[in-house]
Image 1 (cartoon, rainbow, N blue to C red):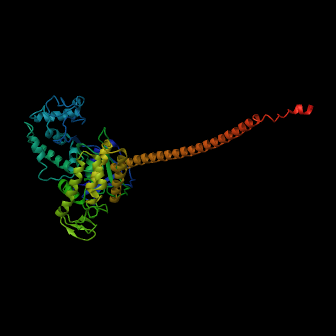
Image 2 (image 1 turned 180 degrees about the horizontal axis):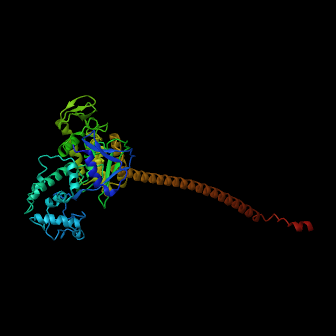
Image 3 (image 1 turned 135 degrees about the vertical axis):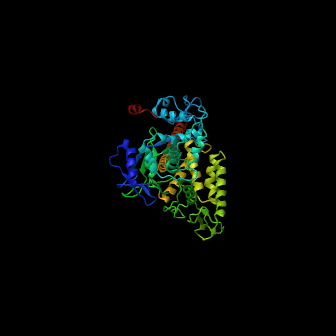
Length: 505
C-alpha cells in the first residue's frame, strides 16, 4: 500500500487552488480497504466535506456518442466542420483552438500522425484523456501512481487499439507505461460517464479522474454524495448524514437500487473487489427487500431472498416456509417480471405502464423489487418531461405516490441526503402543495355552493313571503271592491249626510 502521508502531500499540491486552511478530511488507514478519506472533525448532514478538481478530463467518446464536442471546453459543436484544421484528429471550437491546452494536445497528436485527421474517430478522441497524462508534471504523475489501479489483462487493450489509428504512435516503453497505468487508474477510480455508477449522485458525462475522490472507498449505503459545478467541473462532496470525527467518508460505485447479486457482480468485474458492508451481509438488505421475490409455493405468502454466499448464482431461501430454491428457478420469476414490465414500458403508453404497476404487477412481483423501483423511477423521469397520455389527475397522483414509494425504500436502506432524495422531496413538496391548493379550491367551491344554496333558500322564503303578502293585499282589495259595489246597487238607502250637514240640521 502506498503511504497515506505521501498521498496526502501530493493531494495538498493538487488542491492548493482551493486554499482550504482547515480541511475536514485526511487520508488515513481504512477498515474497508487499505486507505481512505477520514473525517477530521464532526460533520453535519449537508456540509461540504471537500472540493476536488479533475487531474485529467476529456470526452468519454463511446461508439454510440455524438463526437461533435469540443475536446477542451467539452461543449457541443455544429454537426459539420468541427475538426481541428491542423491535422491532430481532435474536435475543437474556434475559441479553444487558440488556447494553450489545445496547442499541447494538438502538437502531441500531430506528432503521432493520425491516419484520418479530418474524420472524427472515437478511439482517438477517447484516448486524449489518457494521453494528457504524458504532459503532466512529475508530482501530478506521481499522484496518478498513488491511486489504486487494477492491472488486469485488459488494461493495455485501449492503448494497443489506439496505436492502430496513428502512423507514428510512440514505442517508448516509459510513455506506453504511463498511458497503460492511467487507463488502469481511470477504470478503477475514474469517471467514464455515470450511467452505470449510481442513481444517487449528479450525472457526469465525461471521462475524468478526481484524485481525492479516487481515494474515497465504497459502501453500498454511503455517508456522502457528490455534485458538480457546471462551469468549472469542480466536484463538491457533501455529508449525506452526520459523520462523527474519525469516521471514514464513503461513496457508492453502484446503483443504489440494484440487488445484492447485481452489486456484487458489478464490483467484482468492474472494480476488482468484494463488498462486505452491512447491506451486503444482510439477505433482506435492511428490510428493503430490493432482491425479494414471491415464494414458488402457491400456498405460501412469504418472500424469497438470495443467500449471502459470495457466489454469483446463490441459492434462495423463503423467509416464511424456509423452502430453498435454485438461482435458476428464481431467475425465471425475475426474468418474467422484468419482461412483463419492460413490455409495458416500451408500449409508448405511459398511462398503460402506470396502470400496470398500480393494478397488476404486485400479483407476480413484490413492489419492493428493484425492477418495480426502477420502473417507477422511469415513470417519474418521463413525467418530468410531460404527462404524455396520462390525465392530469393520474399524473399528479402518480408523482405523489411514486415519490413516496421510492423515498420509503431509501429510508429503509438508511440512506441520508442525496441529489435523488432532494429531487424526490421537492417533487413531493410541489405535489402536496398542488393537492392542498386543489383541496382548498374544492372546499372554497363547496362553501360557495353552500352559501349560494342558503341564499337561494332565503330568496325563496322572501319570495314566498312577498307572494303571501301580495295575496293578502289582493284579497283585501277584492273585499273592498265587493263592499263598494254593494252600496251603489241599493237605491232605497240614502247616503249619510256629511258631519257638517248633520250638525246644521
